[in-house]
Length: 221
Length: 54
Length: 240
Image 1 (cartoon, each protein chain N blue to C red):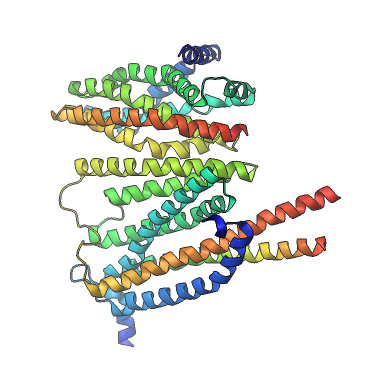
Image 2 (cartoon, chains in turn blue, green, orange):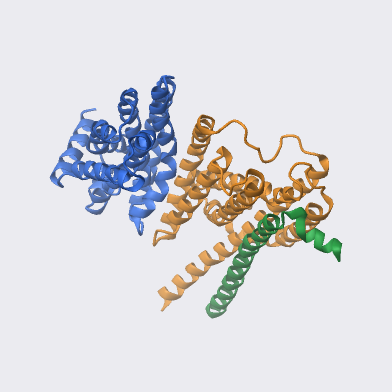
């Protein structure tokens, strides 16, 4: 367990040193959401209607941004090879990477989401579901993204390819994230949707490490 | 003659039915041609390489 | 099981099987087309537009069937590291993508006269669209590496990840659809179907399946020959 924590700390340190990955992701998130009123017009009713969708779609795109580097720097400087020799199984290392990635992207995204909801006039009843949904959904984005990042290591046009692979897999998170907000605005309660997101998170944390570790192993061969 | 015209008219749905079948021919035919052309090319290359080896 | 999957044995039996497959495919597709266009009756609701069904529905079946074959061969390739299974998965992908594209476009051409619009965000159409993107992602990934074996491995893992995700995506799209869809939508492919329409449909479906099998054998043979060619060239290079 301590090795697990050390790996997370290492990744966080690296992220800090490389300078504000989190800040860039949040800036992209805010800027892209701000573009929408220019695109569809500033009418509060329209923005309110589509606020949940805009925030979630933009969050998916923002989560993609820093994925490419998830294993790439370690792969290129050889530290991935060194890490694979550790007694800690590669599966746990993948999990540690995902936690670190979530802490520098998913968590900041979740924290600024209410601010963007305010700009888009989201119904006050939807804030709780937005925050909870993001808190449950963004870790899934990091996990699924890790599979894509591991598969595209050393590929040509890795970044674009990564988006092509990962975005279709993000669809369930998007659907239930938005449905949770709309259900609680409609007064039905977001509980079932949030429970499904929880189930997806559990499923993803159980399966992703194996897939991503298998992908890393074949990249190291 | 009228019967043929009637057949091709597809009860007024000609502009939907024929493109759908046409696309089927194009897609399946395209895959077929691609597969066969590649096959012949590989066969020729392999025969040539084995010839050189001998 | 693997007695038939050794590359040389595969070349042997596939070469013998191929003419029969090709002949059966041609006969079934010709008979199926004849029955679908000339013999099958027009639908009492949809009129002659129902003839789109005979390409659309088999294409839809093949779209998911081929993905299943891809996933199964990928599993075999990963577990037993079998090169022929790798090739089967890789060569299935373009065929599956072709069937999926055909399914989408013919569905759109069927939708316009029936629904009055080219595209409906119907649960099934949307799932097929996602499936199409999964095929494209797989093809792009397999071809993105300089080393063919890396591409094959990565593709096999992706195909398995996709097959785990497909039911989840399907389920979420269905859920999403029940939330947003107004109740009365004309549904393509009624559950009860007259025998006069079912026979042509089944013959077309079997024809499409055999078409896939035939082309898959041809493509796998090409891929194996390409591998042999690479090995021969390497020998020549080393000799020189």
